[in-house]
Image: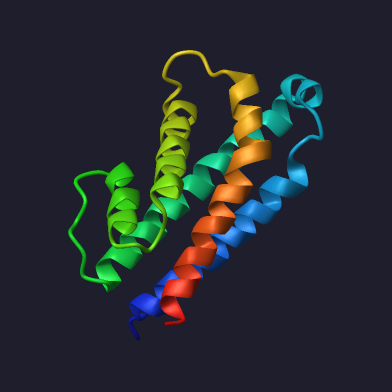
Length: 143
């Protein structure tokens, strides 16, 4: 069995994230009221949020490995390492770390989930931040 190169794995992960993001966009209700009243849509959106953020962390780890950078102690540090090396901005790293925190709340149900905050993250932040992240990673690998 042939091993995939890191670059192939990075491309596969980018494609996976794009697919998840496209699905999320297609199922996200237009407004908060519809979101909060549709249990299935809310659950599906939350699950895609989790999958997108986890895949972004995986992608960050692959980039770190391919560039032979310092191994992070935890998932959130992956974004700091990429920012330190100028692969992504510090602002983007902070946004992605916030998304990872939100993902943890959704996945592990720490405390009460604030539906308004989740909906805002889904509709106003995640798509923008993930697209920016993917653009920066793709730029890095076209060098």
